[in-house]
Length: 129
Image (cartoon, rainbow, N blue to C red; front, side, top):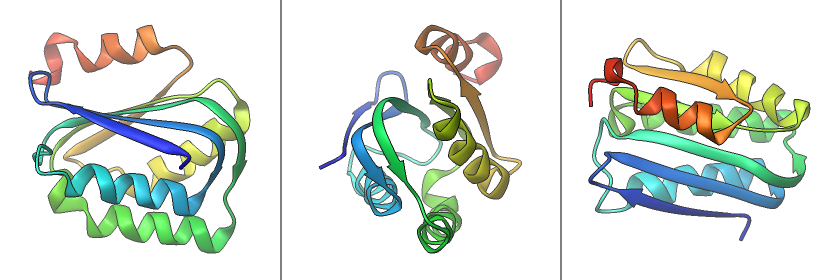
């Protein structure tokens, strides 16, 4: 499995870690697993840790599938923030594609190069938490 997740209800945050060779199907499965977990609540923030991705293979059909899943999960994800941490430019490019297609007025998505910056943003006073 190219992902793992955990949910911290005390911080109202889900953390998705992608690692190794990652495909759109892995991203889709990670989204489904996170939001289907009984601990997840709409409005929790999401931290996508993409720093351990070795190879990212997302073809157009796979990207479309992930975008459709994000759209279908809009209510289940609820309002909140999503931080994506990636070191490689290609990972950032795919994240930007998903951000452009899945950001809603209720869910803000930002990209970061460091975990420290991402956590600072998620924990900032204006986060509503």
